[in-house]
Length: 485
Image 1 (cartoon, rainbow, N blue to C red):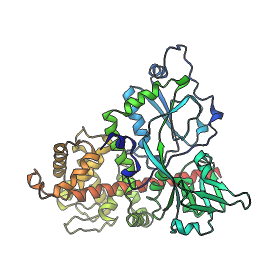
Image 2: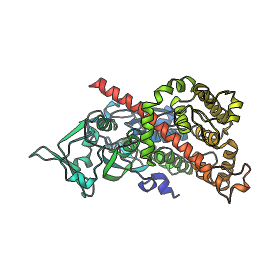
Image 3: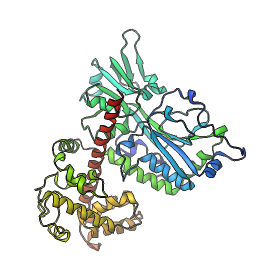
Image 4: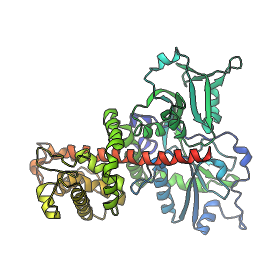
């Protein structure tokens, strides 16, 4: 992996495109922002921050907030947290809906496409992304061009940004709108454009699901995440491509000391490793999409989950109940009477030996199976080495849940032998399939294992968990929207 790829995460690394969260062009009205005052003019901005022992960051409409959990705080949050830790500062970070909510002094703004004013400078690109036209229709782009289109929904921030103004135009003669993609190979027409003042990128997508609009213009991170909730979402066309996503750093009087500190952090080997982890965690997991699997899971959430949700919530303990529900679905599709050819049974598909060890006398009893499965996960989690990152430990434990912890030790050894980091999930996962390689497993301490199936098992759980997180978050977004209307 070259550093340029690992640091930018260009489009070729994944099968989907990411699109920027774009903010209106009226930044000049906020020219009073962040006029830091210092009695000591010799101190640069970074020195001032060090004396205050705090870095203030505001994140605007991050699509990753849809999957905020104990295991995933978001690409930007994890990266900025590592940066602040490297500086030895305290972090003051908040998620906000719009740029005009910023009233205090801020050091980094995440989620805008242009500098608010001349006191701000753009940092290095973290990844590239696209702006996408999406719909729940099944038309192809060429078919849509020939049809009289309906309502297009988008956020006001996207409508106001410069590139969107160049490609989305209104015909003064008939008031209809035309939308060109970046290379002008397609032109789409709309009778109405709805621009939402609430700049949350999921509002236009919720409009689609509620049949309040026919199409939406959104960033592709939001589109990829939304497909986990609405698998029929179709990407009609990439309207703009390869836009760079970067943070903006406060640089009073051309003082770029904070930006330069980030550039040094960004170029380090440690950050390269972190970016590899974050790319796997946040981008790869949503780029791989199985429409049929997602459809049947969403249907099961509606029809089957309500019966078992109270038990998941009651016994989850320190775990997120939605994670336990995702595990149970992967194990049995929420079927308390499930049975596999290997003899594992019940909601959490416990083996007879594991059930006996845990004191579960009836594996087909839903409540007892859930209690036993959670206790077994807890047991495995305690055995994961402390050198493994806290947010990775759960995936190590789940791999062990599926194939046995001895085989996990073998996978760690293989990772180490190959020059990888056995404490990093994004490294270890690549070596799980080797556990069934006839040229490898005879020399392993614990022998043959279906490590490739254990990998699929964990990745499926991560995707199901993402869907459950997204469903809950979208319900909150919709409720707040209704309250405002």
